[in-house]
Length: 182
Image 1 (cartoon, helix red, strand yellow):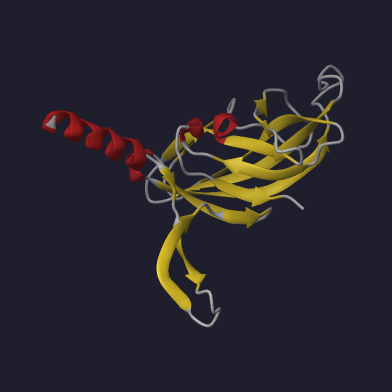
Image 2 (tube, rainbow, N blue to C red):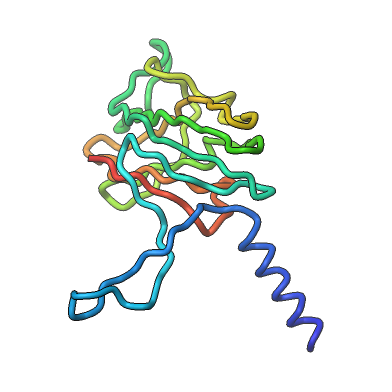
């Protein structure tokens, strides 16, 4: 029994500490509204287009991601690149900056778009004329350097993009950050 409890704690420690978003403690106001309560909660970072969010990668490397622009609609890279019937391309332009250590990942797996219908949309691997993808989604950034690239989505016509989400490790992290799209 003791070994199984220890193993379970080890799995939880590894699963929660591998990578994720740098979270911030938020103080909640008391019911009277006059002073903050002593309890704090961790919140997923929420920002707006143009803002930067900080994340922790594998090996505790720190990096930041800025959602620079949402291009809606985006145009296919050539006359042969078109969205599925009833859909349109939406491109999200990201700037990723490594901290004191190199960072790598796959932007196509980390990014998703959340529609006004509550549906989550994963990356579409088509190219658009407004910006270029990272190296097939992959980024490998040396310490204190920045790389910029697009992640493209197909979103149904009539559905707006309400949020763009970044989940480290291709979404295998419980932590993530969001940008609200006006």
